[in-house]
Length: 202
Image 1: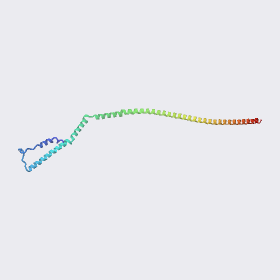
Image 2: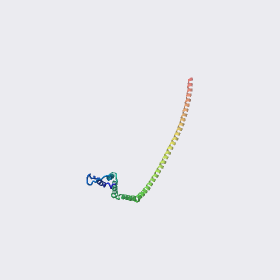
Image 3: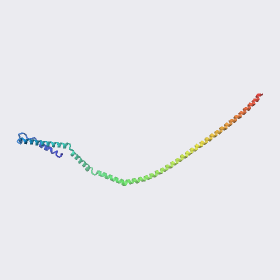
Image 4: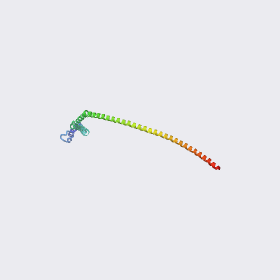
């Protein structure tokens, strides 16, 4: 339809020329059945010309295939001609980098990691053993300190009990001496009373 569009105005212009004026020498005098056939033929021609005009309007407004084909050609040209093999070169460089990494860098990294990890593991093991020994020493020290504290507490308790017993014995001795002193004083006062009673009888 788009190919027929540009040619249709010329045909339409040729077909839509003004009919010859009445009285012209080339104007035939048509009567009867021939005149009806001619008018029907003219109507069909005009309808066909209108159909061509509608097709041209459709091709200009609604048919986007030429525009899309132009965009496709531009995209293909932009992708294939200008970009060239850039993506392929990028992929090739990436492939070479990955190959070099797998073949050279990665084994070196693994070897260095294994060496460093083994050394680090040894150091960690030594540090762990040292910390374990320090913990054992600290536990022993705490145990000794706890034993010393318990011994001191037991010793203090024993001293306290001995002190309380000694105090009780001393209190008993003091009470006994006080009782004896009271008895001596009673006896002394009783003798003095007897002597006073003798002097009083005189």
